[in-house]
Amino acid sequence: MRITAPTMDQVKELIEYFSFDVPQEDIAIYRELIAEAGEDRNSLLIGDIGLPIFGPSRAPGYYPDEREDPLHAWYVRTDISLDCEGPLSGQSVAVKDNISIAGVQMMNGSRILEGYISEIDAPVITRLLQAGATITGKTNSENMCSVGTSVSNANGIIHNPHKRGFSAGGSSSGTGAAIGNGEADIGLGTDSGGSVRIPAAFCGCYGMKATHGLIPCTGVIGMEMTIEGVGPMTTTVEKNAKALQVLAGVDNMDPRQCNPIVDDYTKALGKGVSGLKIGVLREGFGLDCSEADVDQLVLETSKKFASLGASVEEISIPLHKQASIVNSAIFDEGMTQLMMMGNSFGTNHKGLYIPSLMEKQSTWRSRPNDLSKATKLALMTGHYLRENYAGTIYARAQNYGRIITQAYDKAFESYDILLMPTVPMKAQKIPELDCGLREYITRSFEMVPNTSPFNISGHPALAVPCGMRDGLPVSVQLVGKYWSEALLYRAAMALENVIDWKHC
Image (cartoon, rainbow, N blue to C red):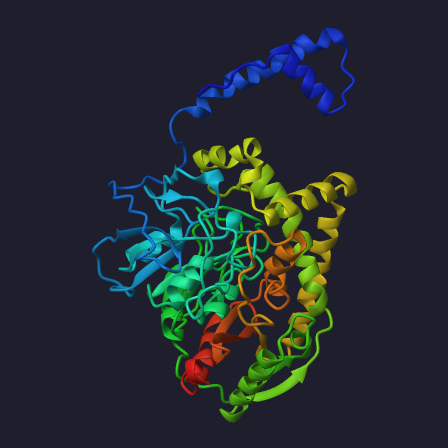
């Protein structure tokens, strides 16, 4: 590939696009200058400059059939390890298919990327392999990771492991289904509005959205840098803590990270909750979409903490109810600019870029109808607001987000943990593929009111299974101060030790 000089017509189109007043005699000069700039930059097209060097080749894996994968949780099955000892030796890992694994296909739930083979291992993959884990496959995600249900993957729906025909959550739907069904020890998801915690809640897993920037997102398809992150999903608290111990820490290639504080996440396991102050967030209950049995079970769970020696009180943070609107405003414009217009990497940061992935992502412009209905809506909304309001809606949302964050921080001056339902309802029946647009969109985002606020604020939040109703899991969300993941694990294990959530 070489940069070619623009034609005169292309230069005229550029001038028209920007509404420039250019004298006729200058058009040819502009063409020459652009051509010269392109010629200078052809040297940048030699090789894969700046990409990490990947080692020996590996088998790309295979596509499982329905007999092996009845939930449709898996995109590709693999068997990747370094054959070394470490803290995760013997542990199998399911990886959401928006995270790069060298030599393995990456689809991100969409036909747009179908056939793309990643060139690098994301740092989180390297860390897992060096810790002795085995990557047993890439899991199906929602189309461009843009919905909270499990209906939009280009290859078909993902089923809940507890009740077929019901949602596995999203967008880390395949990871939730695989972990909830016991098909891997550790799952990796990504979370921009709840996409780790929602499938964890629906499928009966522990799902950690760590403090923003604790885990590097290098090598992950970008959506909106200020709210997204990678997180582990597991069936036990201890496995989750051990996974985070391996995943956490700076990699010097991710602009989201700024001096992350890494802890020993297993040190407090088993210490109980005596003396902790837990605030039950009033605004997390009784929402328009809340189910009464979910609210009741989560409140009963809060009483379990009280019986274990914690101080449990109801608190109010009124701004919590506005936070999901703010997150949507940030997501729509941010996703439009980064993932779509910026081909998942954008500009203005010193993070690691993967040019081949950017080129493949850019093909959405020639096949826009391969995008899901939800992605189309976010793209149209984000572009409309950006073009007609000069980016000020996004700016106001980010400014408002700081006010919301301060409200949570104020509560943390008096409380160690905030408690509420992870999602206000149990997993819903998967909507019919030919359902109306409004129903499709409503069902795609109805579950985020308690998860997305903490993407804005950046606080760590852990989804914890706490019981079953109508054959489906119910989950309580524990939220802590920045870098307090160890404390959340401590509280979660105290609960794990006293309840058998699958039978209560």
